[in-house]
Amino acid sequence: MSDADTFRQETRAWLEENCPASMRRAVKSDKDQCWGGRNWVFESEDQKIWLERMAERGWTAPQWPVEYGGGGLSRQEAKILQEEMASIVARRPLESFGIDMLGPALFKFASEEQKQRFIPPIVRGEIRWCQGYSEPNAGSDLASLQTRADDQGDHYLVNGSKIWTSYADKSDWIFCLVRTDFDAPKHQGISFLLFDMASPGVSTNPIKLISGNSPFCETVFENVRVPKENLVGELNKGWDIAKYLLTHERQMIGGFGLSRAGSKSTGRTAAQVIGTSDGRLADGGLRADIAAFEIDEMAFALTVERVVDEAKAGQGTGAASSVLKLYGTELNKLRNELLMSIGGSGALPWGSEENATLAQHWLRSKGNSIEGGSSEIQLNIIAKRILGLPA
Image: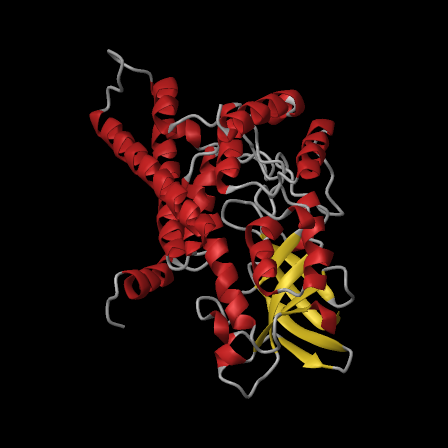
């Protein structure tokens, strides 16, 4: 057997022995998936066990270096792990902005001391992070941000506010863009700070969306003291970090276009809800819409796989992340539209925040094309950086 075959067999056996049965089903809500952090209350003992076992192997971040707590796997091995988890519908042991966004930025820009301090706790799920980027007057034009960090000798004093801060009310730490030079051009006076959300002067207020859920918050900083050792990269060079991190955020949000492990396809859902005649849906129009969607979904999944492989091979993601973000969010919106059509009046009931219904998921999906950079912004990036069109 090849090394890959041996690794696959060993991984399959380990997952079979160590993944609890209750962790082998599709995630139903935010509470149903593990976010970790110092305030996290595990939904079950199995959820805790699954995180601990995967983190011990570094498989919460399988390709990160072993010296920082990661799994140290090769691209091929990480892909095999993903495939074997999918085959038993094993859920991801940890949802983490630290893994999906902050970690890659720390590896590229942080000091060695900062890497040793922050990356291993991310792998173990000990710190839950939120992102302090958008402001009331700095959304798509993010570089116009006005939250300031004034130099106070051994620390910065942060004042200002952020908006749409996902899970800020539940997070332990924030990675935050602040203005440190008000005289420089707007892109050149920004710095990248990390600080504890329990710091005096930090307050959050959940924002209820049309779906009835409140994943977003308004976050306010009033004279928040941040030690200078929490500055990542160079002073006033935070825009470079911000752009790099955004490519990972867009790729993460683009993942909305992929079906969750263990979930039924739209076609199977339609067959179950509506029924079939001679083995197919009687509604030809709906049948054609579902077929077109599932073809696009498969094409998108292959595109994601290709972009990820290229990035792991050192080619970077760059503007391709805008393609993933744009198309993935549009696919998720279309998926929810189809599910509402399939469900008909049965899709209208309203649930709770923890057990959202089809109607709530449909309404929530409308925000996908705004969050993380609107579709219009992504189209501009694609036009300029991929298609080479004139400004």
